[in-house]
Length: 311
Ligand code: BDR
Ligand code: CA
Image (cartoon, rainbow, N blue to C red; front, side, top):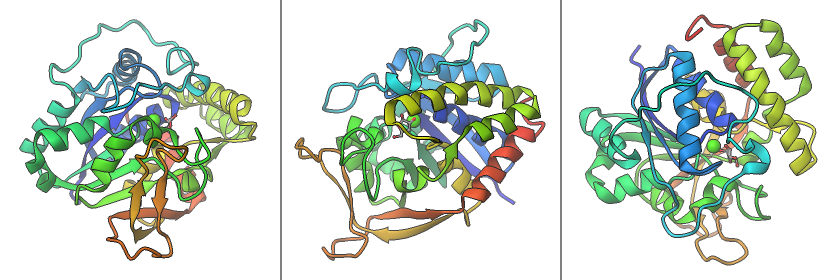
């Protein structure tokens, strides 16, 4: 079977780290490259974290430092969940910092010029992809689909209306959602069902291998921080759901509908306005994740943690 070619655009971030691992370990996925964006922490920190993860697990793909800031608004980080480093909880050896010479958008453009039918997965603010689409619109034809973690059919997590990745760069999300490229939104209404609990951490620790220990150490901090921040029992493991949905296309139920990104800069700025019941009769521009088989998700993740890949 032909592998799914992906470019991963991310801002590690604890859940981004798990998304990288899942993509690299899947025999169904060919990871072409990783572009990094500022989001959970500054671009210096998110790219440093990406490099560390890839070096530690021997993931040999180009890694490029992408945009240091959103298109229009000021940068905003998420230190309360991801900590001062952006990836608190795991200490890496000291690696030499060698990044790809191209910036995030340039790397995407180059990889898309050399490859077609590529899936772009974004697990951070969508700045790099929006820039790439503006710099070279022809790349649209080379993209099979965009799968993004962001938004919500219901409540936000940084305001009543908005989810973090979209709020940070709503203009970029607006460009991507209206690009005409097939696009799938995996939002909080789904990812809030995938909860890391003490029980999950205990189970992964018991596997006692390189990947599971990495996962457990990161998730310990991720869970504690989310408990403090949101007063919730489990920590939603947002980003890896994007990759899992590619590994098993029966994991998520999608519904095609109109999605409008609120770029009003008012109190609902960053909201993904999902017209589930087609009130507006507006063009259906996005496949929105409506339901997930949580058990299947954990099977996919545990399969990755148990596998010999990147041990
Ligand atoms: C998203 O925001 C970040 O904190 C996470 O990495 C995830 O991509 C969830 O709102
Ligand atoms: Ca992220």
